[in-house]
Structures are given as C-alpha cells and as structure tokens.
Image 1 (spheres, rainbow, N blue to C red):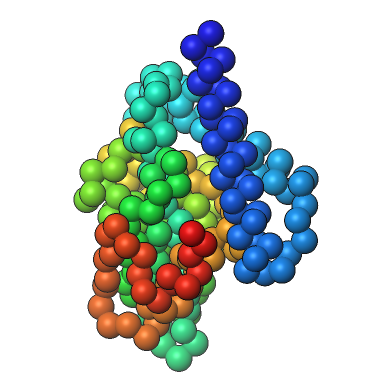
Image 2 (image 1 turned 30 degrees about the vertical axis):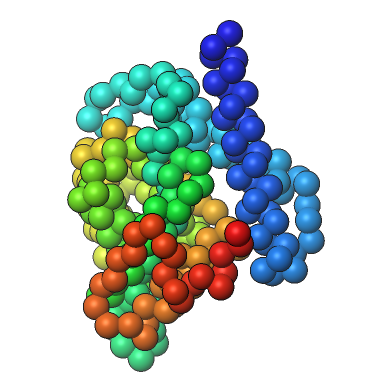
Length: 225
C-alpha cells in the first residue's frame, strides 16, 4: 500500500509541475493550451523519476540505488542549463538555475567559457560546469534539464564522439561517478526560459556570478509567483 501511495504522489507532483510549465508557456509565449502536451510532459517526468528512485537504477560505477523513500523529492536537485554564443567573440556564456525536487528555487550561476563559436560545445560546457558546481555543493541526486536535443542525445549515446563537444561530454560522464544519480533530460526552450535569459544576460556581465535563495535581478521579471 505504501508503494501505491508513493507512486500516486509522484504522479501528482509530475502533473502539477507540467501544468505550471504549460501555464508559463501560455503567459510568456502566447502558446495555446494543449492538454496533450501537459500529459506528455508529466509522463516524461514520471518516467525519469521512476527510473531514478522507484525501480532503482544501476549506475556506471556498479552501484544500485535503493527504492524511493518519502525524502527523495527533497534530496533531488533539478538544474536547468543553457548557453549563449556571442558572434563577436570566441567565448560563450553558460547559466544554471537550480531547484529542489518540489520546484523551490535554490540557486543560480552564470559564467563564461571558451567555445570557439560552437553552440553545441557551449551547451556541453554548460552541462559540465553545472555538474562541477553540483559536486562542489554536495548535491548527490541531480537531474539536468537542457533545451539542446542533440547534446542530450549524445549524452545518452555510447558511441565515440571525437568532436570538441564530444570530449566535454566525456568529461560529463566522468563526473557522474561523484553522484548517487544523474539524469539528463531534454525540454523545450519554453520550459527553460530562466536559464536561457540568464545565459544571455551573462554576455554583459563580467566574471562568474552565483545567487542563492533569491533569483538574479536580471531574470526576476520572468518569474511567475
């Protein structure tokens, strides 16, 4: 019975999160409300959480993760990442916006990286920077959201990739050993608006910046209370 209650809680949270994302899409982008998209996103989230916590997952290091407990959502860290490339320079700009498993804002970070005008390399660097930061913060269960479908596909592929982006993604896989669980999830740009805006804002900022507890001023106007 406890297992049924846990699954019902996950379904409820996934549906609430999907409704919230779709509502923001309607407000920010005047996108028509589509119940089918809401359901699809909820199912996708539920599948990720099920693989991570409810059925157990075997990591590359050989560790098997235990079945979920009531504290799993509190332990889960969701990181939205994005990158921006400025045509006038070889640097790119990366950003991460972090939430706990209940969707409460925790932190944000932006910085510059060298990406040789390559947007896929910049996105890979954004994920690598986010994982390195998560490791420094001691976050053990991480779900990384990116709106770059190619990079997400490459992260899930076992094929050898000798490009610059492929080398960075190999570093991302090496970083996974420092966590209990890591999952990479593709989401549409409309669901990644804060990370996208923060990466763009970093172009006009100097040096890396971190924010805790409060959203960065440059993206506060996008936050729906």
